[in-house]
Length: 102
Image (cartoon, rainbow, N blue to C red):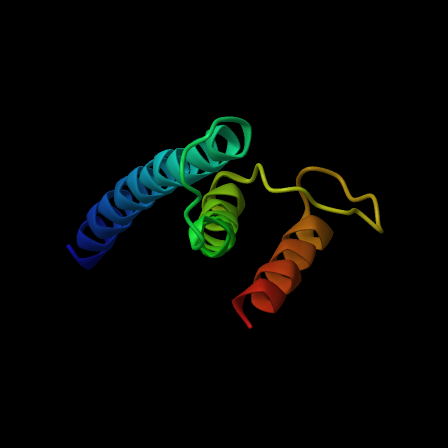
């Protein structure tokens, strides 16, 4: 019972996080595009677009890295080459995820 509730919660959280990353990408593109055109065309510059872009990029990277770790598509550096299955691979994954948790 609790396991199915937790799986449902995590599935909903994953969906919301994917939506959040998509919205961040869309919102990030708007001020960047405006600033590019403001430099090329005689339209007024907005001062805060650089700060907003930096803030949104940081949140985008943090949120997308959560999705990458969950989907196991985030980049990894393998120092030791373990098999895909086995106790050493499992211990290595536990160690890496505990470091990421900190």
